Length: 194
Image (cartoon, rainbow, N blue to C red):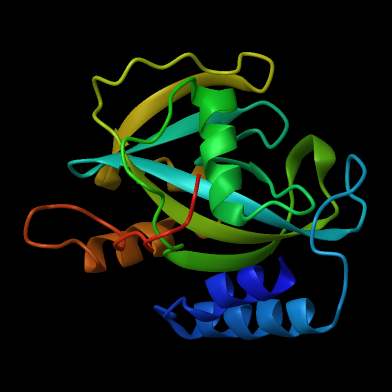
């Protein structure tokens, strides 16, 4: 699985110098042989892999008001040992929002390396940012133990002051990848089961 995770990270094309730095850090971390997945709560090892997934539709992004982080964030979760990060997206989408993706999960759009904040602050997340397409009319059954609320925001209305510190950069990169049909992100890789 380490090889598959490394390939997932290495395929990301950095949008800016900070992402280039995070990409290099993440590849060095994977190559170091360190444990990549959280094996004990809240933060063992103190640096671990996360799959963020931005649910998007026509210039809007779905964010959750996360109780622990105290921020509006994309949904996501820790990659379990032996689990491909795209499988994490599918699992967490069902657990956190109550639906399955309509299409295969494509390669991650972005990578970030960040210190966590909020009630479980003090560890580092290496986050792969995926894009999941869904309609704003999609019925949602969100995890009320983890989130106060879920809400669609127009890209221009995302509360950046109360969100992930990389959210602005992610939206900029998302906008830069929009195709003529208004779809964001990348095409899925054939053959990856979810």
